[in-house]
Image (cartoon, rainbow, N blue to C red; front, side, top):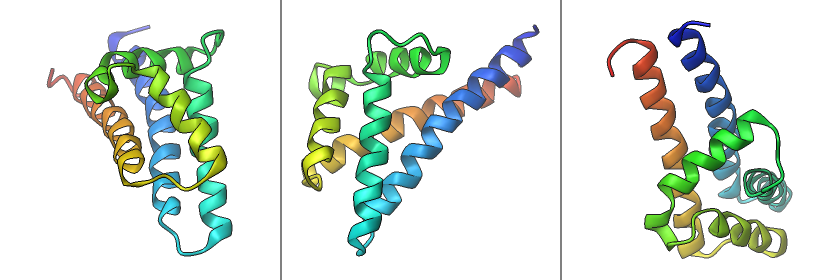
Length: 124
């Protein structure tokens, strides 16, 4: 497989996680309770997937590695933060600090998507 093919596959996998998270974060701000409950569940599911140390799913392993690298600046704990946020979202709406942390995770994934797309286009 060519570098472009590999990067394209990586991009698709990253984009899928990033889109799921972005869409759920948008829904998390909905005034309708059933939409926010569903969004909290979706984000919690995503974070449970990426913090599963026994996962053998390539996309999950990739996203976990990206977040381990990108998240220490948030809490010093990386994936532990995802586990904690997943548990919080199972119980309640996030507070402003937790929402900021969720947005940081989304930003890290979006940034990596952009970097991967730039590699595909030969700009990096």
